[in-house]
Length: 361
Ligand code: SF4
Image (cartoon, rainbow, N blue to C red; front, top):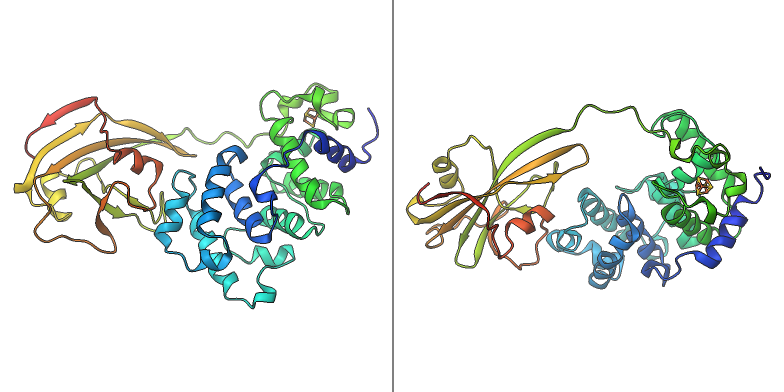
């Protein structure tokens, strides 16, 4: 095995030939654009992020535009990207940044970024390195994988001992020159070559010094966390209540799944329909048809949710429309923040597989 020297130089030389240089946040690489992209890239692949990023910065070109934006519009532009706490934190952080003096709007150090909601050490390092070219390290999932394999870092990557060692290595390899390019390069290497499954070691610029490759143990690194208990399964009922071309939406609590997004109201499965509907302002006499559509499953990181859709068609809007902070009648194409599941539920075409047809609640 060759000496573990000039790791960064070899990664940069590889990136100069093979790396991604056309990502929209690289042109121009301003603090605002880099920060937005790094938050979007948390737990999300670059190819998925690109169209969301382009729409988001077109709508909010500056941190001041974002700070003064309507929260629903921010969530609307995030709809489908998932992990919505990221959008809420980004919005709150923009408000704090916009309140600072113009000369001082964006911190130049990792610690300053880490004071903002939704910005951890790796995101802060990525922004400082890419936006200001200052020497700062990152340790996202891609980088963690490269370093854990290259150095055979033992222990679950979630353990504090492995984290300490990985951060030490990340800092050790971060160069003093071309820090912005190196940051993108090491992320690209993890995303495209040192992939989670089937790494392409023959195309890797650090193959000669990779300890896991030397022993054919690429697949054993990084060590996984001990297996968690089995995924749980939940079942929840969602009411898609329509009157003409309007649909009733409910704002979900800020904390919890799909926090702050609008959604067809969710109610317990065992709650009687004729009790639920009046509580949502629906007059039972106006119900024309109730349809229980086929359930479908939606996976979250720790559990699966069986969505039980109930479509309720009304002959007219309630005489007394409860419209406001938590309930509103909206058109299906209104610019509101909807989760992917909510968007699917209120799509113009309802599920065709109907398991039960009722005429009265
Ligand atoms: Fe990853 Fe293979 Fe490169 Fe090692 S040689 S860093 S396992 S791609």
